[in-house]
Every structure is written in C-alpha cells, then in structure tokens.
Image 1: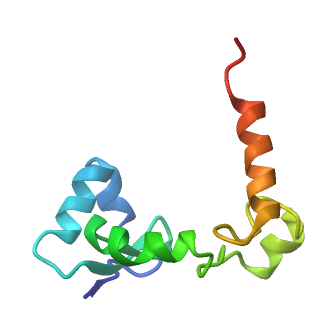
Image 2: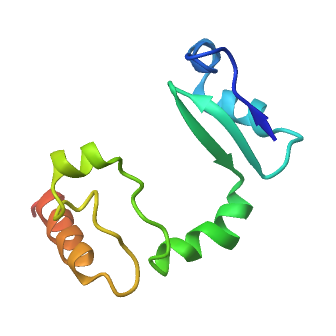
Length: 109
C-alpha cells in the first residue's frame, strides 16, 4: 500500500498538525504491515513492529542491510565513519568504533 501525499511536501503538513506518533498510527491503521509514504520531504516505508522484529531486525544483525547513504554522504563522512560502515555479524570495525563512541558518551562516575 502507498500514500505519497501532496507533491514534493508529501504528508509533512499532516505531521506538524498532529503528533508524529498520532500521524503514524493514522497511516498504518487498517493497512498492510508496510506502507510507502512521503515523510519530511523523502520517500519512506513505515513498517509494523511485528514485520520489523520478524524480518528486518534479523537482517540487520546478520549484516545483510547496508547504510543506504548516497555517494555524496559517503564522500563527506568518509569510508571509516561509523554511520557508513555496515554493522552486524562479521563487521568488527563498526563494532569497535561504536563501542568507543558509547564509552566516550556515557556518564562519568
């Protein structure tokens, strides 16, 4: 199922007229588990938590999903950025960088 909203701006006015959670509930209520829509000026797929937990989460953990960054973002961030590196099993560089970031951002005793 898809609902793209108005040209260019999509459903952005609807999001600002109600809460984000309320808008999301309205979009997925009574529809299939995945809905294609335009959200804050970009095409987005909203998925139910059940679909996420059954399929997408396991694919993330196995490293089958990539970051999806456009080539310009890869050039700006660099190929060693934690945002562009694939995560999941077998991707030790991402895990090492993420661990260092989390330790540096954690509250100090």
